[in-house]
Length: 245
Ligand code: BJW
Ligand code: ZN
Image (cartoon, rainbow, N blue to C red):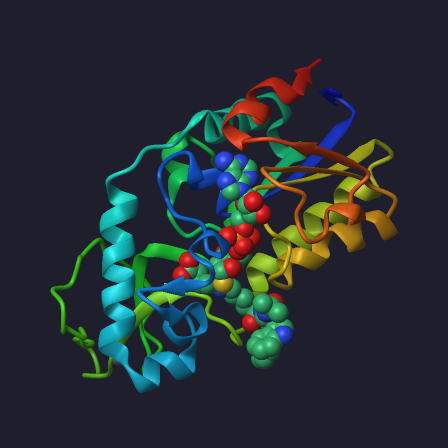
């Protein structure tokens, strides 16, 4: 296996997906064949799905909250913490995962591109998102204390825009890294590379002259778009991949 050298010249942007949490026991999306209890994922993770059946959507997210609260970070998460400690501000972790496991492992420079399972917001008023670990009983749709509107999970659903501040943080980091005069590296781990805009980052990095790495259990949809591709479990590969220099 080739090694990823992380020295004082290196800037590193990491993108993680569901595969990184798989060894902690969190199911991946495409692993469920894109289905949850026989519902296509778009029915439980889209604004249209929420309008049609908010009870179903809250059942899905309550079940996911209970599942994520019961699991623990794995050696893949831990490796990323060690890399961040080594690189400091030359490291950024963009995660598509909403389970909060990166922060629980100790990662600090994290952008949660698709939101957070343990936050809730109002679907009607501008009240800011708030921490919420509640596992709502089946059939419940919680309402807003401020306006009486329906509360919803603080998740970026299909067809919704990602938070522009999150996107700018990633873009600014990539710009600083690729114009630093140093070496800019992008590494994606445990993601099937089908959901945009995350899946497009690799192309932007290549255009900017960055080095690209993929760590995935199977050759992902976009593996040919990466310069280096390592096949294996992230919890086994990541702890051995980097040489901290
Ligand atoms: C391992 C492993 C181990 C396993 N080690 N590896 C047509 C209709 C509607 C929308 C679109 C459309 N065409 C394009 C769009 C845009 C859409 C999109 O990209 N769709 C594609 C599916 C085509 N994107 C969006 O809608 C985004 N918004 C947007 O573009 O706004 C502009 C816009 C506005 C209006 C209209 C259209 C566009 C938002 C995307 C939000 C995604 N949200 C979700 C669900 C909510 C989060 C949640 O509830 O958790 O986020 S979708 C789901 O996929 C989830 C994930 O974060 C995301 C990515 O999945 P990920 O992480 O890659 O997981 P998997 O399961 O796919 O892959 C795991 C991989 O790991 C596999 O390869 C395994 O082999 C591997 N693996 N074990 C290493 N141990
Ligand atoms: Zn409200």
